[in-house]
Structures are given as structure tokens and as C-alpha cells.
Image (tube, rainbow, N blue to C red):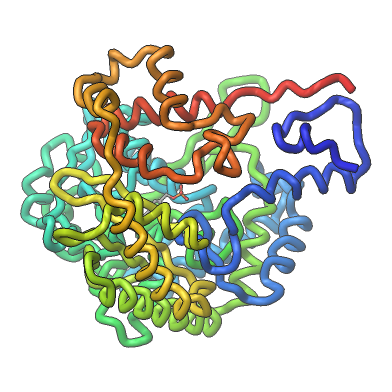
Length: 507
Ligand SMILES: Cc1ncc(COP(=O)(O)O)c(C=O)c1O
């Protein structure tokens, strides 16, 4: 028998239990999660719905879970698999023998954020003479660039995107380059809206200024080349573009590998050189790391290797075709509903929509979709861009597309009937007046309670399955009304309330 109370809180007792009990506890905890499979979760997960693939990846992971990437000479299997993954990514992204970029090299990292941090670190460390380095990033660039800038003490110059195209103007990107700029970044495509930046123009401007240019293809780098082969008008964005010095692509996204694997590519080894960290000035082993972590499990890398080997080029082409059709079907469903409009015509694997004039409250709509088993991702309004709903579409969505249209229409009707969320006057006044610095622990606890946010041990307002209330519209409306700085601070505090040790018992 599983002790439900322990499973729910996730607290470990110190006495050991049988293996099947431990596993049952994991399964019990997992039962409250969003569904990772089945094509109804439009963020966080990438599901190709290929029978047997999960088992293959799990078996490969098990083979290499205890292998350590710390020293590539001790575990040549890992070195070989990493080199194979880098080679595959290089081929997909226009590098390798017989191309314009034959000398591409790279590293396997733990994810997109690590790849971007390393791209910024490498660019920064290539110029030790620049004491106050800066990077130029479009506003639509992934938040991980801001994280990299923050961690590495590099200044972030953000170029706004056009509200019509959702892309930065290359001239504005060029104008933002200063003598201290070490890197210019762009996305192929952006996560929020799924549009491909004008990479060729931006890379040319960077090259003219003698600055590196990183293309963040973490999200779509594994689908855009296949979409192009299927006939889509994908603009140039890879190593075929002169001036592109590095590209990142996440294998745990559209290469459908389990989490924990991304690849950072450089056009040549000289560009990669400042990425390495080496330290011999201590009594232990000389540490040579190409990535941020030192000890690294071989599990995710082996799982990615097996996934790529199994699916192969033809598999990815087929899965991309399936995904492309699903995207088209979902976009049609959005077009068919009065009161919604697409933020952009889909050009990758994202469908992003907003409310048109007189349309439903988007945050209420998101809740109505959740109630119908569709888990979408609300995006807040930002710098003249309206709030929107993001759908990351993967191959698993395809069999669901026909069900989505009627449910979307139904959810919109329900959201219209419910009307927009009204922030209680005192909350609206508070958010309007509050600065991040003025936020006290008491205010945070009061706000969390008022919004029905739980403490991580219970059910939020009692209606949801986890620490969040079942309906998030009030929370999202409040966050949307807050400035980005206040939103960041509020969420840090809320998440901090959730992340507390579960002490367990001695029993
Ligand atoms: C374009 C882009 N870059 C970077 C990242 C960060 O990747 P990760 O979550 O693997 O760190 C993402 C994640 O969605 C992304 O879409």
C-alpha cells in the first residue's frame, strides 16, 4: 500500500522501501502532472507519437546513465556519441563536408539555455580587451539571452520587434551594434510567435562590424530544414548564410530526444576555442570543460543518439510533414472562430493567436480550453504586443486536430458568456501602485492567498489538482497588469513559496 499522504507531499521518509513502492510513489506523484503524451499539451513537451521510441530512449539512457562526461578519454562511448550528435546537427544546419561551412564544430549541452549562455560566454571571452561587453538581441529573442547577460555580466541591448511582422528591423539591429558589442543574436524561429528573423541581413550587419552572430535555432532548428525540403518558403538562416558564426539547436525539442540535450555549433574551431574552461592550478585532476557542467550523465546523450539513429533523416522528414499539416489544421480552426486572429501566419511549428476587437478575454479562454483538456500557454502583453495564446505543435497533435476546432469554438462561446475577468479594485490598485522593491513577504503571502495560489502541499484554492487554482484567469490578468519587473518579482516570490523542503519523517 502506498501512503497517500506522503506521496502527495512528495516527502521522503528515511526508512527504505521496496523498489515497487518507490516506483509507485513516483507514479503517484506523476499522476497530477500535465499530460506529456497524447497531443493535448501545447508547451513544454515534444511528442512524436512514434510507437516504441520512449522505450528505446529509456533503454539507451539506462545503458549510459552512470557514464560521466567529465573526461572524454575515460568513456570513449560518450565522446563518439557526442561527436555523432554534433555531426548530425551540423549536417541539418548547413555545415560539414561539401558545404560552405565544412569546418563546423560543436558541443553537446544540457539544453537551450546552456547553449545560449555558452554562445554569449564564448563571444565575451573572445574579446578580453573589451571591459564592458554587450550583446544585441531582438525583444523576441529567448529569455535565456537575458539570463546569459545577467550571469556573465554582459549588457543586453534589446531591439524591439515590429508589431506587424514580429521581427526586428535589420537596420535597427545594425544601429544597436557598438564598439563593445561582442555578439548579435537572432532567432530561427522565435519561440513566442514562431517567426524567423531576417538572419541574412542581421548576420551581414554583424559581419560588417566584425562581430559574431548567433542564430538561436534551439526551438526550430530541427524542423525548418525539413519544412524547406517539403517545399515551405523557409528563408536562409543556417551556416549557408555568411556571417553566421554559431547556431544552437535543441535535440530535446524537435529531434524528439528526452530532455537534457542541445547542441551548440560554431563555424570553426577557432571560434569555439574561448568556450573551453581549463584549470590545472589545484592538487586534483586538471579540469577541462567545454560546457558548464563538469560531471555529466551519459544518459540523455545516449538517449538522444538512439532517438536520432532510430528516426533518421526519413523519419524526421515524415514527422515534419505530419506536424506541418497539424499546424495548418490548427491555424484553420483559429481562423474559423469569430473574435480570434493569428498573431502571424504560421511559418514554423507554432500557432499563436490573440483576441480581435470585441473578442473573448484570452485568459478566460485559456481556462475554458483547459477545462476541455487542451493545455495552451498564455503569453502576457508586451511593449505594444497584445496578450496571446501560444501553441507549440508536435507530431502527436495531428490525430487531435479535428477535435480542436469544435472545442475552440465552444471555449470561445463560454469565455464570451463568462465575460472578461474583473480584477478586484483593491488588487488593481495594488498592482498599479506597487514597485518590486515595495513587495514585502507579508504582501506576497496575502496576494498568493487572495489569488488561490497554494503553498505546494495542498490544492491551491481547493479546486485544482496541484498548487495552482484550476482557473488561472485572475492570476494571469493580475500578472498582465503588472510591469515586467513587478511580474518577475511576484513570480519569484510565488515560486519561492512553492519551493520548500519536504522534510519527511524518520519512520
Ligand atoms: C528559441 C529558444 N531558445 C532557447 C530556449 C531555451 O531552451 P531550454 O528550455 O532547453 O533551456 C527555448 C525554449 O523553449 C527556445 O524556444
